[in-house]
Image 1: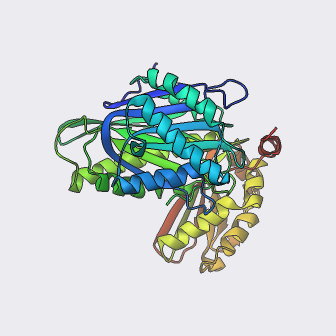
Image 2 (image 1 turned 90 degrees about the horizontal axis):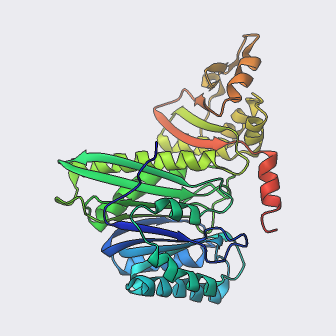
Image 3 (image 1 turned 60 degrees about the vertical axis):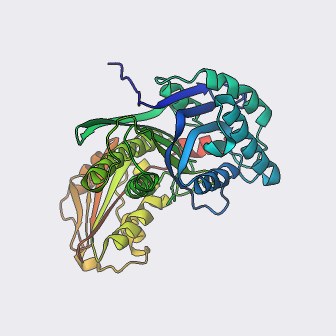
Length: 398
């Protein structure tokens, strides 16, 4: 079945500009015919890349409105000094010229190797072709143009009816390594034809990233270039969403981002297993999240996942160093459907280890840690740390 990915009010393009050595698609563009409400959440990495800084400034000055986004892959334009700043500005200027917009209406994003000068001449030469290629049905080409070590494009779409209006949400993401987003190398882009104010769209996006993109970890590294944007054309018509309608839209946006985050995790560098880490029974949600994040980022837990080894002591050790109150006598742990610890007592079943190992051989499974101390709960997505991951990143620059 062929899925038609379209969202009223937006066109997409993906072309090869020559930044990538292999001639693959490496320059993408999303464009609207007019200035539209735009929201974004950026990396909190203090070594933020030049495009992140520029896009953040543009959105602040425009009070949350933009007309287009230009993205290159193959080079992060991060830690590139004054020239990197100039190149990011030129990228916005050239992108704007290609579609007849102002530079202050165009956001920019980059992904790839850190610390190398951006070949802005190649990007400049590729932008007119990207503008000519803009089509409503071209999000697949755009999604392919933003990839680095990803195995393939990751796209998701949702359609809902709110107040009698048919609304579409369409998004894509990239990222395979350097993933532990702290956005309030993943780049994600969402468009919708819903009618929203810039403030409402920003609120919806900021809410939706918390349990989705901010609750995943491939390797525990937050990129210098993390960025997610959302643009709303208003082509669905009607009044601006607010109240219960806005909450319904936010729920749908969260579901879309959750699907994209899962696709990103499955496509992680050398990933064979994706694990839902559920932590509950803490004094509050913040404590649960801290424990879940510590477990998800633990190299020893990740290698145990890679080896399908139910060495649950590593999980308890990670929970114990999370800096959160813990009573081992009240703590229980389940791997898949297999209880391995109950109220501080190891399982007495003779076959628990084989059953737990079998559960860990699945591509996806849950890990449930109950602290037995309160109503707090959280979920985090984690994965294995494999030999392939080491190989991919050892040879990344070469």
